Each structure stands twice: as structure tokens, then as C-alpha cells.
Length: 511
Image 1 (cartoon, helix red, strand yellow):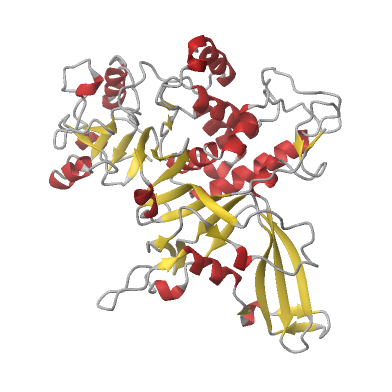
Image 2: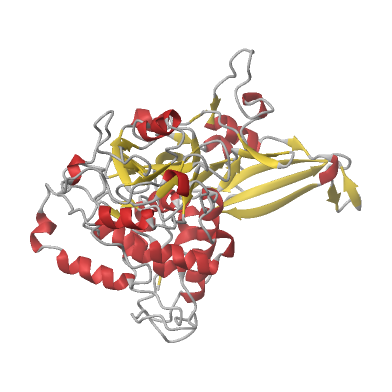
């Protein structure tokens, strides 16, 4: 957004700290060198709100010191507007400060989770495939056998309220089967056709060619695996999203769940249109012409049962799904979506309570009367959901935002959830005659990633993600990646869960 407070708050054009050692950039209060933010009014450096929050505390004490800049990603944030800033002052204070910060030499990556600064900005219109090649050239032969080498856990730079995208990308990148599939693909070409003779080949996009989100996602996932720095910029992917999804244009905060759903749907459509090729190199997974890696990993099937209360006629419908959206039951929230005041504490809601609410029998409201084929008119009826087939990765979305009058409010209640051993057995249709061949494997799931929304509103706030990588849990906060533990993950107020089935089974590859 364009901030109206810049002219009053932005007073410095260069950092006051006269040091070329990035390790000297630390919070003046707690001395932490994680997520340093510089005040544009006085030049003092404090830590971000997801470390110890001294940058925000500085603003609360000095209300004119409202704008600050991330010393690592160079993103500018206004606390009064509660938004990232995209404009500049007439004197170009932000541009000059960014240039000063970018000129600071990079240090060796000695602190796990601390992103390194760039000497120059990435070219947003540059060719990501060229970056891949440069990264491959930099890799030393001895790296392959170096078991002491630090794990590659890479952050994503915030391009201006793009935390919703970063949280989704980090979650998907840490689902091994999904990430490995894309990183092992050759470069994708929009001219590849399902029934044509063309096979995988590498070439540059030309003007007028269809833009492929799958190709830009592939490049981003490859960069996350091969990056030599602690954070990369997903500018190419974000520019493609701007072009193919008009609603995501601009720098307003977006909903992470809506973005996830669109991305998965788009990836499935693109891959379905390109694969399979009529050759032995085909990488199609599942039934020919129907499944892709997206549906094979995230795809499940619901059974929707509707019963007429007048004549007892039963109607069954099978609905495929990539994720399940769960209500937080009303008994765990008050009408304002928060803990009731001056009353006894509300009971703690569990994820199982949300799943029970989703699958319980309910009577349809008068506005949702079901047309009974036997009665030949709309009648009172009941509805119930069963899970007919479980996916390999169970994506669960908590409906934390509800419409109240003319605005969306957030339900900020804590929902207890298991890190390991989520048992979905009681929510599955057990009629073996109806589910023959569609329900196999373990019903136990373990958490792989979780997205958290921080803040009070749907159009504001901040998204971060927790994900497990090589057996360890990490907190992904844009360009900052810090190691954490299960206890911290279990206490977060989750928005989207990614649970992986213990018996992960992909359909056989079709050639």
C-alpha cells in the first residue's frame, strides 16, 4: 500500500551503524541478530515482532517512529497502517537506504536461520533457469559426500505482503513426495500437448506463449533445494501469479487458503493438459488422463448422503476434494469469535471436535430444502458427510474467518491438534461393499507442516509456517528460518494443517 506517513517518519537515508560486519546488526535491547529492523526515523535497530518484538515496542513508545525497514529483505513496514509500504518519499529515502544496506558485504552463514543480505537486488524479470545453471556450477564435487554439511533450509523473501504465498510454498516444499516430483521434472514448455508428439525439452518462453505456473513453481522448488544463501526471492513465480490471477495483483494481504486452493487447481489443470506424452518418458501418475501428482497426493473422495425426512428416500453423491474446510464448533467460541468475558473459561477445542462437527448428521435449514425425487418437491431432509477415500496428504483448513454484518472477523481460539498419530478411522465410510478398492492403507497421519495466521483481520496480519525437514521442526517467517521444537509447534493457533499418511502410496506410474 502507499503509506501516508512516510514524509513524517522517514528521516534517514543511510544506516547510522558504521560497520561492514553484518553480525554487528543486532537489536539494541536484547542483542539478538535475528530479524533486525531499522527505524527510518532515528536509525536504531530492533528485532522483529516474531523474535522479541522490540521494533514494535519502539513504535509504541515513539509514535512518530512508525516506519521501519527489514535489514535483510529490505521490505518496509508501517505500524500505523499495519501494512507493508510500496511508495517512497520525494527525497527517495527508502531507495537510498536500501542501496546502503545492499552494499554491506555478506557474512558466512554461521547462524542457523539467519538470512544473509544480498549485495544487489535480484532481477525480477530474469531467467530462473539461468539461476539454476549457475547454482549447479557453484556446487563443489566434495559437497556430495560431505555428511557434516548443514541442512539446506532456505527462506523466501517478502516482496510486499507476500507472506501468504511464502507460507504455502514452504509447506509444499517440505512435503517430500510433492517437492521431489517437481524438482526431478525437466523444464516444462507450454507447447507440450497431451496428444502431440512433443516430449520434454527446454526452451525459452516467447511472447504470446501460455504462462505455466507449474514451470515457475518447479524453478522455485529447485532454487530452494540448491540455493547457497539463506533466503531466495520468488519474484518470477509471483509475477506469473499476477498475470494469471488478477485478484492476487497488488500488494494487499491475501488469504493463504484461497491461494493454496487456486495453486493446486491450476497445477492440476496445467499438468493434465500436458501429460501424458505418447512416449516411454511419460511421467503421468494414476489413471490415464484423469490424475496428476496433485490429485494423487492431495486428492480424496467424500460421500454426501441426503435423506428425505418425509418419505425416507436416500441420495448419495461422491465429491472429490483436495482439502477439507472445518468449522470451529460454536460451543468453543462466543458470538464475537473470542473467549467469553466475565464468564467461565471456554473448553479447549480439539481438532477431532472440528472433524466430528464436519461429519455429524445435520438437518438442512429451510433455505436449503432438498428436492426429493420421490416426493417431486422440496422437503425437509438431513445431510451427512463421510470420507470415502483418504488422501496421502490430508490438508485441513480451519474456518477462522466469518462474516459478521459487513466485515469478516477472526476466530482466534486455540485448537489443540496432534503432532503424531491423527487417527481418521472414525470418519471413514466403513461399508466395505461401497468402498471396495477405494480405501486402503493406514488411517494414521503425522503432521508435516502447519500455516499460522497472526493478527486480527483477514485482510491484515501476517502468515508464517512450521514444517518438519530432515526430522527437525523449523519456523519459516519469510526470509528468516529458525529451528524450533514440537512443543512450540503444538502451541500455535493453526490455520491450515498438512498431515502425511504413514503408509504413503502413490498409484503406479503410467508409461
